[in-house]
Image 1 (cartoon, rainbow over the protein chains, first blue to last red):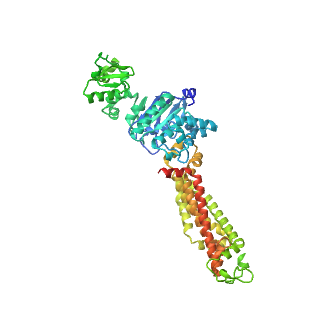
Image 2: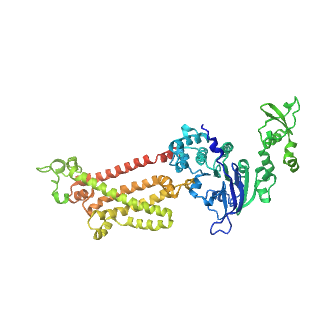
Image 3: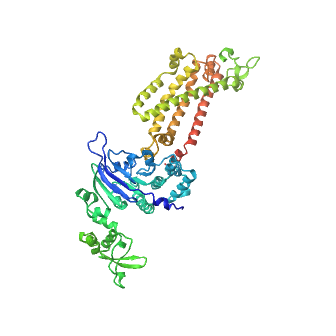
Length: 335
Length: 244
């Protein structure tokens, strides 16, 4: 695969919502109400909330599929209101739940849509398309000339992702991109997208109504409530540890402590030294396991300690008290 | 013109010099001999006239229906008036419509074309509009979100996807126009209707049987060509069927 490292490094942009309000004519309640937040370049910001929270509206104002009523959105310091809507959209990757691939075009032509609009030379488009097909994990021989109807739902969304990334956009907008997939395919695509994002570092605005997906995907989460009001904007760990109010606490769920544990892996925890020679008395678990899964294993085995192993063998013990201490407010301050 | 030149004597009509014999003399249902003998001076010229009338009628009808469907696609209010107008035209009996036009446009090809165009409008308009409206909303949203202009959305997405419905409409319009155009000979002696009328008037069976058969063959042939053309233009539609 050819490398476009330099181009990628410079291709993320900061997004700033500055007092953004959207009012639709004839509606008393605003769809989005005085939304202000900053998405740092290269991060994934998840907009999450119940329906009627205005999360999709907020996202669509970034590429001007919806126009801002009051306030402004800045991409890389430039106001979207000052940009030509058509040119802006060609610089912003756009992925939607039902993918919306063009049924009459092959996978390659679908992916090449925006480069063609931008007038790239044919050879460059072809090269970029084959690069993307591999990047999103499709089979170049089997899928390049296939029509969308010949692909599974998961494969279609891979093409959707490739198509959105084709012209190396500054920003990507993703509207419930994995919402229509079965749970196994969804999880695989989530993982692969996170891996891709780690590599490419686009600024992503990701809309979902699923708090678990938000916690998994987001560097930051913006929780919107009815009327398009921002309830809380922070990292997943901070929101789970300190919900701003009753609404957020209810929205993230009573099991928010367990959700926090799912964000940490045993490798991130300071383990107890393993007593020499009798590690075999403990159930073993890989260092890459999340604390949540480790806790589940303790409950399942009826044990208070687990032996954590990595490539070099047993590297320490993890106890239920340690896990609990991580969740306690004092424990957090000591860290 | 045949009407003036051919002697209306049965069963001598069309026979070789020295009088009719065999099938023609007996006024048989279908005489190959007559078809061979008059392919060049009757059947082929009438066939080409018929094709020309049909092509002009469907061509002009398509242009009008296409413009109207585009307008109705953008401005919903336009659908009902145009739909009602074209449905009204469609219900007028063809002979009556041609007769009604004669005082204005005379016994001319123009009279016939106005009538034929009128009959294509309803089918073409409905099918084109249905095709445009059948484009999935997700596809349109993705197209707009990627920065296609309204014009690019129309030409690169909506029209290609509407093609199966549009071509279904063209097929029906072509076949009905070929059939209807035989009535045109009532107004002016053009097309395959002319030998049919003449054969009926003179009671010469072979003439109207073979010309009618030719009209049917023309309709089937044109339809088959349109199907082949549509398949060639929409390979993706078969991909969908294969996996559905």
